[in-house]
Picture 1 (tube, rainbow, N blue to C red):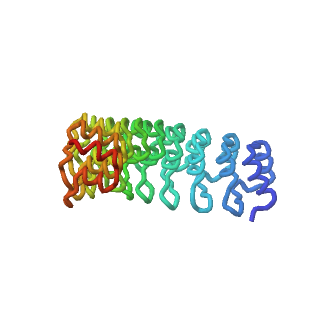
Picture 2 (picture 1 turned 90 degrees about the vertical axis):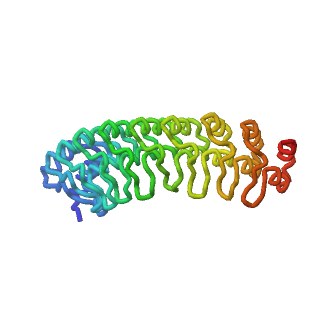
Length: 324
């Protein structure tokens, strides 16, 4: 249990009162005193961004690698908060960039997830491992891509971060960017060699995911970098079918312009045209018909597009298809 002088040291550190810190030290206060929750004066100063207090405490022998509640080090806590100047001071005092929380989070991963670019660059500059993953396999690059932090992504790639690492959940940096709808990060990753035909955490090809989400820009980037247009997921959903089901007409136009087969079949023989009818997507159906989709094709159960329209009582669809 800290004595009153030690507690005053912690309060002075949090407030950044350097003169008080030195006076308390001269009176015998413990520079490594702890609150009941495990906080030390150095941790209190670091989290609050009190860089002068951090330096003063380090000069007085504060433990630079002390852990909060036996979990995160001072450097990890400062990196999480994006306290770049504090991080620089801690690094200069020998704080370990390879230290981890129980879950495997390093200072670099913490800063990358939070998008603290200046802190990330400071850590990389002293040799922090750009590929050090946590216990779930999440790397700094995956964390930054998932949270949309472009500057951090670029900093990591500049230090040769591995672009195709897959976390235990199945996500990669590219699939994370696609899922987040971040076209800028997706493009940067593709330019750096990300596997365009990889699958996301749900085992879907990325072009299927982008098409289902209606992200024209990302779908275009994927196709430009070699994504297979006729690829499909485990249940047979291909990009055009995914876009049709969601009524994603701009993506459908892109796919058809790039050579997608308007009659490509999915599960149980369903075509995009039949799916468009069932989902009551008149604009999508018009586009498919204009692109040469065959309304006579039937599912494995013998259902054609007109049958589906009649069964659903979709009079507008029936009118569109009856003369075909």
